[in-house]
Image (cartoon, rainbow, N blue to C red; front, side, top):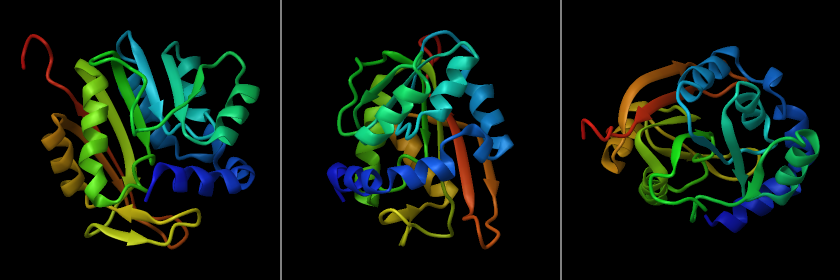
Amino acid sequence: MSTEQVRDAYGSLAGLYINLFGTTEQHHADDLALVERHLTIRPGRVLDVGCGPGHYTAHLRSRGVDAVGIDPVPEFIAHAKATHPDGDYRLGSLAGLDAGDGAVAGILAWYSLIHLPPSDLDGALAELRRVTAPGGTLVAGFVDGDEVSAFDHKVITAYRWPAEEFSARLAHAGFREIERHQRPGDGAVRPHAAIVAVTPSAERP
């Protein structure tokens, strides 16, 4: 599945998506706390990769973080700029981030990896690793599952990942898991997982 297919699918439903998920009040308080706890602890730029309507980017910026929202969907970037005019939102994608090697202190990838076919995940994680500074932090949220499998997401095909397998992929890319959270599904909400991982520091590779 290409970036263009995901972009076009979300673009066609951007208004509905924004209404359902476009503010932090529409997200679990534990998730906001996790993101804030790990991505406001050190100076440096944080990329919100796949920022969607820009609410997490704005939340981080309200906490003093130099956060930049990146998304391939023009409709999301236009909404984010209009809703959060003091923010920094840019068109872009995991196909090639506009950042130098080791240039950012942290990355938020909140459900922005779920549409990648399993064969593409390692390349995406390698790109995230490339731009992350020594000792930097990645916070990733995704759909939990007992096995890697596709499912019929309301926008476009997505994939479940067992947390253990996702963590192993992170390790292969050069990240080290330091925290994990999981919530079971309840029929209306899918099982959730989030992993916090760091890169080796310059002092202790």
